[in-house]
Length: 319
Image (cartoon, rainbow, N blue to C red; front, side, top):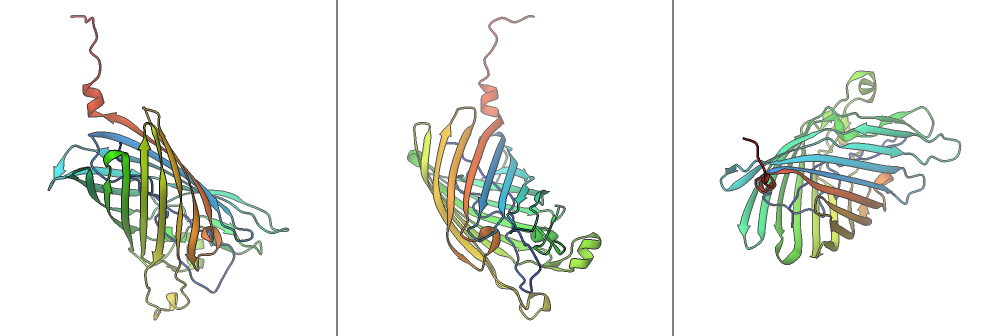
């Protein structure tokens, strides 16, 4: 079974002005489920994951996230780990469902691009582990959307105000057609009082952002070309310093969701479809409150050294 990895972005939507300060997840919760961590054969791999969801809350927006990434398995090793650079340029799509009398809006934004590297070890007996380290570079589009009063605008992506450092540790078992994977991710916000640029940034002032933890779990089984199983994921903010004025009214949030996955290997690429539903949340509200989310993923090797070596030799040659 092909082992793959995904790193990308997330989305949170804030509509209207509030005295409560609440941050947003930097990495999209659940963006790693369905994937296994481990060394890939030398080559270049493309993985694209699109998801769309909506919370149960009245007037909750439809929120879509698209995550295209490239992984280069170099074939080089350091301390036994295969070196695999990775880059991702996610984007976010928002369609509001405002109450009567307030016009709806459709908007799309580029997220902070991610640049990093995976160190992947094959431990034997179909067990592999990996460590990912990288950064979401703070050059994305914060976006703005009108509040319910039609005037006050707030950033759709407040977590883009700062560059963030990502660390992920994962372990996978891929024997006998199984993919049993657990991945734990920590996001460190470089500037927890970062400001957006320009006049809008000056008006908004510093943006409160907290460090976060994520857990992604996968348990699937392959039957021929079909894959079926369960996935689950969750995230939580880490404590902040409430003695600082910016965080005096800060409200921590978190969520946990679970669902089912079906995949099919078409040979030249692999597709996965899964649906997840929030089973527990704390102070989330808006886009992530009791959310049902549909996911679609394509995994395709663009080039592999093994395929190149196995290319057929012409029966006739010109000399």
